[in-house]
Image (cartoon, rainbow, N blue to C red; front, side):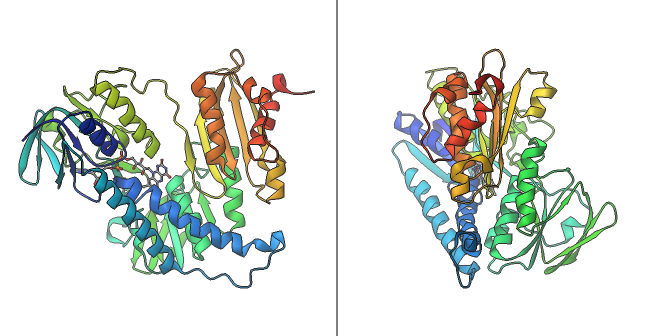
Length: 454
Ligand SMILES: Cc1cc2nc3c(=O)[nH]c(=O)nc-3n(C[C@H](O)[C@H](O)[C@H](O)COP(=O)(O)OP(=O)(O)OC[C@H]3O[C@@H](n4cnc5c(N)ncnc54)[C@H](O)[C@@H]3O)c2cc1C
């Protein structure tokens, strides 16, 4: 059949794009081979944050003595936690399915692949459109570690299908996915070892940011093997052995591989449509999401990075205007904040100090322990650190990173300021409510010599 637009993938960009285009009168086909809603809803944000809420409840109950409240016995019902997660995910995914029941919108269930220029085959039928949008997302990478392919291992999807708590979870990868799962399973009661070949967890962060999280993890009894390369894996279900390059052996009951993600383009037939991929399978796009093939755009994780739900959603917002000829703004110069939903959270936006130095960008920086904040002391959530970088000439914020309670909320103070192109002085001049964590953001900015109240 012929449509105005074909969207491949019902991810975080695909669904709002398809529904809004259909509402604008375009005849749209959306193809989905799996569950509606993509990674975020089914195997990413929603299930992890749902399960982490249980992990935090267990932690708060276990450590409530520090607040003078004595919880007699804390019991984690892992099966109940997984059931709650499954129900929430099902509701979300079904909700996405209902959203797609719209006028002008046709849903094709099945694997879609290009069979020619602007031609896509789904479930044996060939469809054509003037505009095609690729939103196929990404999946976990399996690193080429010796023996890994022949040993039972878990990924972000299968680890959340377990019905029994692992006794000892080995986590290969100390990025955000490895950190979130590692702390979650530790708080459920498993022994956890996180291994990463970098010297720090969350290796893209400045060292003091990573170090603040590592301190918390170690205090919670998570074993960290950093600067350690996995040389080989062997064993069977329940008995996994991971040998490090130096010869040390780690033993665990389960292995979670969280070593990065690669785009779902291997079986998309991009070559048939003239859509160029880079060496990692990423669809090459310009700032307006154009691929190398006329009329074909790509959005979300498949375009490389940053790989976040809000980024994919924002891609849809910008591409929608481009497709309707309303604007050609594209994603150039946008700020992409992020949060690692560990406890404390790790959030950031803009440049890190390392990136500023590498790019020879002039900056002034201030850091402050999270424990300096009155509210943090009152609620006993003192772990963490805050950091800000400003441009000495314009006083604009170049970047910020926060490890601390509700860091994912606090970072938006900086995001909004950066988006507005405002001076960090606005934070000094604003009145902040006492006692809040946000007050700490003001105190942090006042640590910069030029904003000091001395
Ligand atoms: C464990 C985990 C936790 C995460 N937590 C967060 C978080 O807290 N916050 C955050 O912002 N991000 C988080 N992310 C990242 C986030 O999930 C992704 O960035 C987000 O889902 C963006 O997805 P997308 O729109 O590019 O595609 P996806 O959501 O991956 O959707 C792609 C869709 O395309 C379908 N598809 C693929 N190929 C085909 C084909 N050939 N034919 C038909 N359909 C196809 C897939 O089935 C899928 O439904 C997390 C990811 C993981 C793995």
